[in-house]
Length: 274
Image (cartoon, rainbow, N blue to C red; front, side):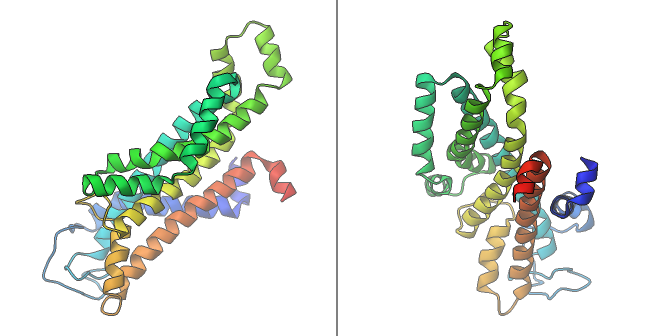
């Protein structure tokens, strides 16, 4: 795997980009001891020694907001990916392995949920709850986001259960639980891991979109809110829009590159075909 990491430009660049954003989020409060939410009189200060990325129209340090926004983006992205992929894998794997009525219900439910984008549900919750918290946002996105992952896991499990080695271990007396966890799940781990990396990007973009519309988590700095703010003051302070846009581009691009690199690592035959 280390050799592939060295040889794969996508995986290498993606990992370094994600690590950079994570370090900014973790070390930001230590390096930039300024509040990312409290206003000051130093309004629209251009980037310089006092404020590396300048300040916005409320006098808030842009670099401090970028660091705080990185923590929020990673929290929502990773939380959404873990919840949606974990739930989707469990439901889809079970449905694909056992089949029958449960499988039919899962397929019908997935079709219904995929017709209703998760962002719309999050928007609805945002209107009703008047800017929900981070946990509520993650749950709202995962409430429909798991369906796509469940469909993939179900298809893979349905294919795996028909293989000879699965039939063999069942003939030897292995329980369904053992077959699922020790034989089927490992076959699904690679594709679902790739799905997880892509789901991180989906969660990040969803949070940014909601915050841009003013429906994101309250009381925390968000790149989406910075984009909305930056568009209003782009002439006076273009650095606000540029900083938030570049941060979002780097994180989403890095995660997608990691997903492509992991896909090539876990499925080299598919890479050769491409």
